[in-house]
Image 1 (cartoon, helix red, strand yellow):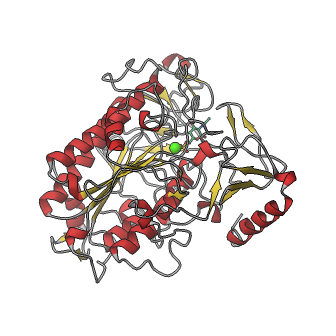
Image 2 (cartoon, rainbow, N blue to C red):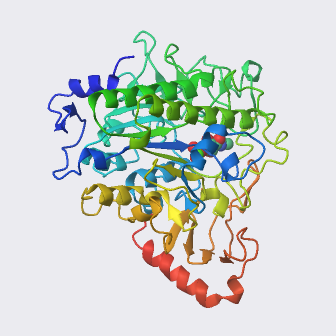
Image 3 (cartoon, rainbow, N blue to C red):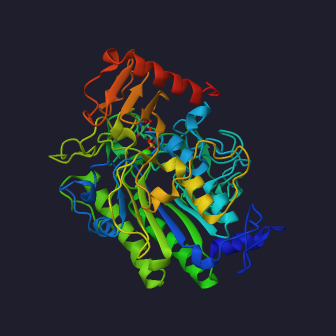
Length: 523
Ligand code: NG6
Ligand code: CA
């Protein structure tokens, strides 16, 4: 396979040379004082989608076999109290990549497929940081952080900037948003892949293109029923959120998405190995987000319907990239992280039998809520870190958050984060490597309605907030209440006993903390 990330680099006039191997970058100049290459293990960050704390075998599920993830778990630090900073994808990913709480801005909610780039190209990202440490960097898979300068204003038939290559990644092969949103095409380094100029791509989130079938008007064309929304353009027999026209050759086949992610990820790693360059690979799977369309290899294999089948597919994906590390001889020199962007959901808009076939499977584990919710299962996610012979497997219980990755790795690699960047990210590298048990003292979390909660020591405080308590479509308790909620987590990990009235002074103190932390919030 060709090496598109090098082709891109070579084609960028004036790109700076980074590192001894002579690879070039889209955006950055290298950091001046780098640790030696033996102190720079590769970083493979596998960010899965909507995988709940209880969804995989190594976190307690006995319903779906996940042998590759279990194997990884047996050699990893398995964090028991790791949180995404939000219970939906866009703000969660924004925080992970920038080290900033997404709720500080009012434009970081679940993004449309034609959203402008949510990370501004002036912002410093996790990829910039690895780049400054001399790494080759790539984003492969789900993006969901917008592209271009203007929502709805992209020309999908030429290179769109900003794209991940303007945000610190040397190479990107991404789905612009989610599999349930148009455009249903791969975007490589800002260009729609396999686009035939004679069949240009048009995208709209305002109105349909005349003559194009939709799930709403043409349900007879659908192979998967709908429970909510998702009734616009039909691609591959499945209707989506948003409209698109054209680009028939470029359209993905949902069944092939995992293979495509695996192939492009491995190809990038192979190139890095042959160039002798450490890499940071942000591999964001589409599994297990809706629409759940397992490849024939997994269809019907879990007994839990498509939702269980795509867990098998996710496990396969992990197995493939772990095998590749072994084959490339870099297993010992690579830190592998596996995590998820937010908690689980069962019915997320498509009639895929997830509810009917759930049986005794408990995607949220023992925690309350799920995707979209402010309760723990919204943000508490699996997080495993493997670094063979350097990190001893254990199960840290301290409070942790993905938002801390950027400061942690920066301080470890000796990269100075620019003034004002990654302002909510703390250096937790000792904890990430299992050398210190005590986690964060406090952490702010966000749900779909952008209501906040704070965990502080043994307390979780959820100030009163607007929005529905219950999301009917997904059957999720969102946690929004017109009154304050306070839970003592050691006694009540399921957040079932609101003790706010008994501890008014704790509520006042924690409300003050939230107010101080969020003082510059733009609403
Ligand atoms: C919701 C979608 C859901 C999913 C979610 C984003 C409907 C009814 N539901 O609005 O299917 O796409 O957005 O999920 O449209 S996330 O994991 O990317 O945040
Ligand atoms: Ca998600």
